[in-house]
Amino acid sequence: MEELSLINDCIKGESGAQKQLYEKYAPAMMGICLRYVHERETARDLMHDGFVVLFTKIHTYSGNGSFPAWVKKIFVNTALEYLRKNDILRFSTDIDDAYCFENTDFTVFEQLSANELLECICKLPDCSRTVFNMYAIEGYSHAEIAQILNIQESTSRSQYVRARQSLQKMVTKQIQFLVQ
Image 1 (cartoon, rainbow, N blue to C red):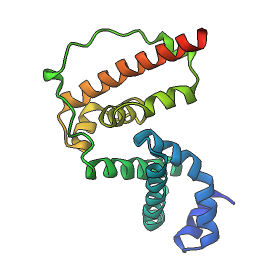
Image 2 (image 1 turned 90 degrees about the vertical axis):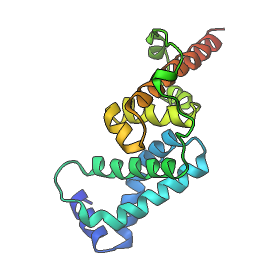
Image 3 (image 1 turned 45 degrees about the horizontal axis):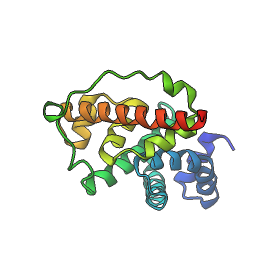
Image 4 (image 1 turned 135 degrees about the vertical axis):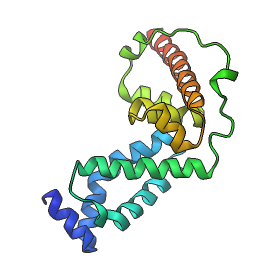
């Protein structure tokens, strides 16, 4: 079924169309939810919450721009709202108060599969993982992240640097394990 027709049927509340849309987008949206929360059950709950929002607000999709991008934004916002409600960044540190960060070499990332890298991202602390996802994967600026998460821009930067350093250490360990 053509996507525009599917969207129109969802607007009309047709359950068959909603099921098709769910089946089409659920795997990718679950991936987004898992990037923000590492517990599978919580991610599944977020995914379902995201679909509730999607079906409730689908009539607001104007047709301008990519529908998949519009859907993705709903799920990112659903995950961020969950993190905000649970005060996930309460332990974040401003970069001015953080330890000195050393330069890192990211050539090790080239030796890792996407799934292995995503597993490493899921192991990051909540605040670092959130900022890393928003900056490196979703493409938000540090200023936008700071505004959305109600943190200082320098805190966003420091959490991103910490995430990169932690990922490099995890990846290096994983590669060393694989080489042995």
